[in-house]
Length: 326
Image (cartoon, rainbow, N blue to C red):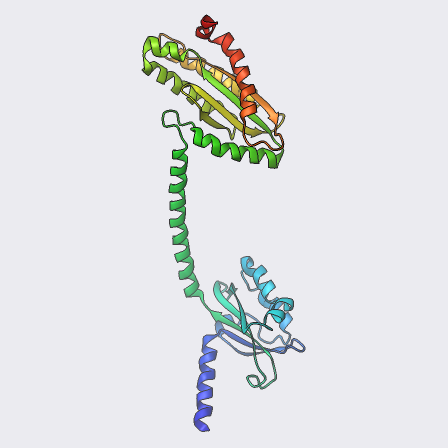
């Protein structure tokens, strides 16, 4: 019997050493008493006889970012119901110590039988130090997030590259299909209008035939560059053919960006021609529409056709090589 008592005392001492604080709580009236606590958390009052009052006091010593989870954990509506089915409940949060710094702790609530508690209490409230383990865990998770972000960035870059036209940096037809769905969804969810613009170089065949394909490539690069710089914010620019481009975006109904885009394109190409001593002039014709999203739309074909008609009207006025064919 003496050996058993000694063994029980040793076990009790070992259990106490595992926890920073041990409380016995009466389920009947909510009273509680502190069985043991470490001096490192003596700033947390140990002489409050009511468990709800103790929780409110401890709440003020929990890190602000963890208080909501602590409040939910110590809500009787939560732990009473859950402890009817589980052996214990726990939550991890940072608790302020006597040195006024916060350290990670695991807070545990578990059932205690009458045999385990001479006072007849039927809940145990335990605080266990997990700071070192938690810090190592957070460092590992931060490293994993960094690796994952790097992989995600690489994937995104490859995904974008696969949808880009290498010569101009605009999207290709794969990109058009993908971003058409994105822009249609945005217009549907936000109530914005759809902006669609069709752009075509002036006299590309003439440039290729007269000055060589290098001149044609230069013209395509110059026009695509101006489109990338001049397009409304959020626009996707797609090279749909050799010298044909489609721009599209979801814009506010009263947006002035399409008109401003037109002015920027014209100014940009005018400046380009003035700064280069080419024996030819690089130009473009374009037409755009800004129209409401239509229920059931799955592509931009209708609006592209309307924008294309407007582009053709401009081409008849601006493209002398096209006029010669008429």
